[in-house]
Length: 397
Ligand code: ADP
Image (tube, rainbow, N blue to C red; front, side, top):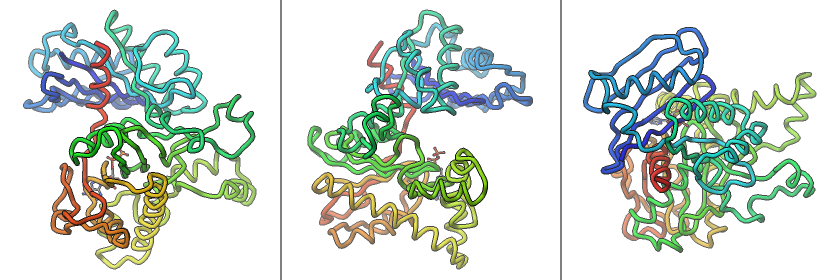
């Protein structure tokens, strides 16, 4: 059984074809600059050479057809025809207040995705375009939507409500949703298995530290807290996002600069975070290199990042009344020994102990960092959002 996983952005389309018999990736790729001059398809079939097609892609419909051609190309393909694809799983950003889990896409689901355009203005329209392009290119196949907000729907009102009048929740859906849900869901369930925790009661804190960063607390894989809010801006310090700020900062900067609110939010989303604090880059590889060269500003940025992170871990450990495990994932979590070490050193007072040699050599692989006598297990578990989407899709086939 082969499942095609689609992740559509406004001008891009990422895909993976996964063989669910052994969960292996048969091919993956990317269409970039869709609707813009210079569009190209980069196709990576497993075990074969990379295949690049430079051709016009005026819209996502054309891009999907090119992906199907590449997948079934006699030389570069991995299947004979699209008939071998059993179903398509789509990453969708926002499911609003009503959708709590992955579902087969029908008119109602498409209506909800459209109703949530306001809540996910950069992603939901592109996600819907991708879905409709697949429906047109492969009529009759099951399409499944896997929402980034589903995991956060596990939260109780005491965790997801903002302390503002009911009207804004009821009429406009203003609440905390949480994002990176597919990753938090996948990694927290993997942690229950890998660390041999009680599948129903195991208490896990997942630190998803990529360009975007968020943290979640779950019990038995059900989310009880997660740091992103109405939008992905809330919570941890990220590559270019500020994370938590006093909302009055928005008013203050807007007035001082003579800007609009949108201008200030653009600043907080795209020109803040580690990029602004370090003055070096939003990329942790550059920041770590600067720290090793004695750059004080980069060092301060890293300390601020870790401070925010341990503050959240402390809060979530309390919400959980004691976590069983803390797991690091995504780009920095999987490949950043410095951040992991700084966080775990901070938590020593709680009885957390890790093996620093193991930490230093842990890059992109599943590994337990904590020692036998650590009060809380600590591990690195690589995230795999595409596999999570494919697994959810399989449930409906
Ligand atoms: P995205 O949120 O875009 O999916 P990723 O999870 O791929 O992000 O994470 C990307 C980030 O991971 C990079 O910006 C970089 O900061 C970090 N990263 C990747 N490799 C390393 C490394 N070897 N050491 C430290 N940080 C790394």
